[in-house]
Image 1 (spheres, one colour):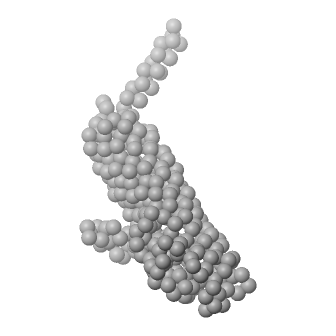
Image 2 (cartoon, helix red, strand yellow):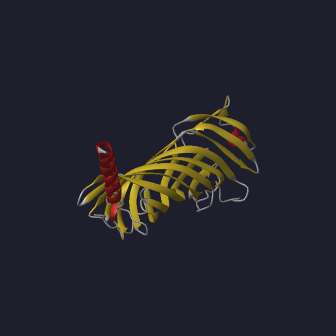
Image 3 (cartoon, one colour):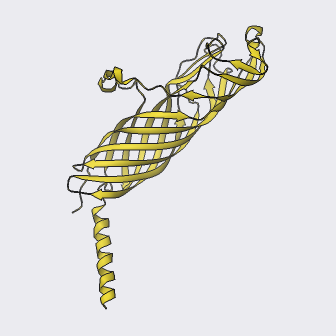
Length: 273
């Protein structure tokens, strides 16, 4: 009987803790605005058109965050979309289970200071002459400049589960984990072999991601969040020139790591006492 009573007390205590852990209630809404840093795996870039069809192998790239010295870009309402930003809204379909629609505005910049392997053909003799022993130097940008800088826009839908790590009167800490999927709508800035650049938003591909986050909830409403995403990005239809948008295309796929940090606000969130 004594063991039974102790077990009953333990179960009751766990149920009490569980009841206190439901700060993000069903029907609540959370809005979020933040900033990101991104890292990209090397990738093969296949470019093709009427007079060329070639692949650049193992191309490296980096992101392009706005310098902190230009801090007004982060707070000025007319400029806040210029940095690498993330914004989303989450609706909680169950206690601590939310569906998120978001936009990740990343920036992808091909490294210019690199020499890469190239296979395929180029009909234009001026640019074909830049290939030496199956390699091409991209340093000066005369052959190719390739950037998704306005940007590598990932429109995604995600599902996250939140678990409470700490519960206090005026703040809570939640760990979140989930998955997401969406489409890529970049505005690609590419200059290829002297052709006029194509700098328009376009549907270029899709992405899949896994995500995890730490969320600090203050006074039941204010949120500070740090999130990590690991994504696979596939772009089978990248516009590269203005001259012939239906023919001149690029294909690439790569992995991306994204670190997101920012602030949010929750509506209809209640503390369970």
